[in-house]
Length: 186
Image (cartoon, rainbow, N blue to C red):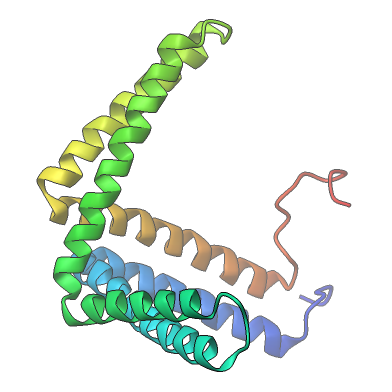
C-alpha cells in the first residue's frame, strides 16, 4: 500500500462508497418492484423542481421564447406531479413504453440482419438473433410490467454490484482502474 497515488482519506471514502453501492445492489435484488417505483418517484421530484425553475426563468428572463419556456415548465410540473402522485401507475406506463421501444428495436435488428447482404453471415445471424430476443423480451415486458420491472432491476443490481466492486478495488489499491490496455492511453 506504500506505492499508492491517493491520500488515505480518499481511499477510505472510495471503499465506503463501493460498500454503499454493493448494499444498494442487494436492496435492488431483494425489492425489484420498489426500486422502479422509487426511481420514478425521484424522477417525478426532479421534474417538479425543473418545472418550477423553467416557469420562474421563463417569467423573469427577457427572451423571445419566454412562453415556450413557461409552457415546458408547466408540462414538466404536470408530469412530475403525476409521477409523484401515482408512482406505480407511472412505472407501469414507462415500462410498457420501454417494451414498445424494445419491440421496434427488435424489428429493426431483424430487418437489418435480413437486408444487409454485405455483412458476414455470422454478423447477420447475430443481428437477427438479438432482434428476436428483443422482441421476446418486449412481449414479456408488455404482458407483465412487473416482470419488466424485475428485468430492469436485475440489470440495475448487476451494474451497481460491479460498480461497487470496482470502486472498492480502486479504494484499496489507491490507483485508478485502467479502462484501456497499456499504450492506448493518451
